[in-house]
Image 1 (cartoon, one colour):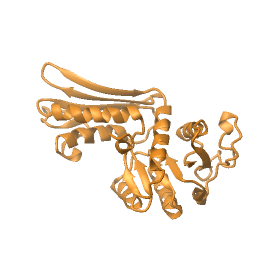
Image 2 (cartoon, helix red, strand yellow):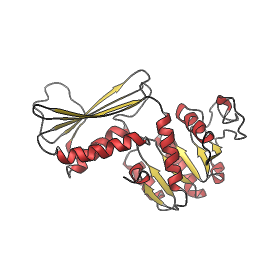
Image 3 (cartoon, one colour):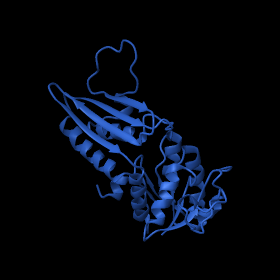
Image 4 (tube, one colour):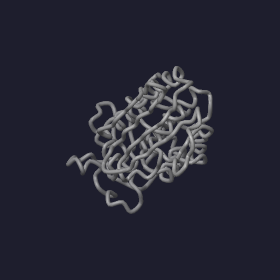
Length: 263
């Protein structure tokens, strides 16, 4: 399977390139960068001291040479790449977060023509955690206050994280409510007592934290905590490769990691 990687000059892009190069069943075919990137014109494996023969480019027509693009960039870049993937019939794995409603709608429309895995977190462990949250939320559906806590590095620009939002959505869905109707995004000043049935969010940005997420179910006399901590982006890369393999042979449709993992 011929794989294209977006954001080839960034940390996650390089992690994905290394993962593909170390995979026996995948071939690095295209490495994309943004216009003006210092990575442009370099060999995609230069940061590893390897000669891959794949030159980093900002020309999206190169996607015609790939079966699947893996994209962990920014919403505006991802949507630009999405259009090119539709033109060339290239499947897509999207790990980018921070999309607005219009961006998510564009992905849904594109999935009518190409196969897409779209998930806020590609980690197998995170998606197992989401399944555990679904079970817990169904059991703890009364008498428990829910808080979603997440912490990431100082350079992350969207908040709460896509994973934290997905965790909140998982709990809300198990309660048969919509997250926007029960979410508490901020607290400041005299907030009054907590309203039952709400889901609170807390965010930390600092240092080089890869990603920590905890969902608290706080009851009377007990507290249940379900936590996932990432110590390396390699888990996201391996999950993304698993998603790319899942798309092989699929021509269209929108899937998430729960589908990839058979959950």
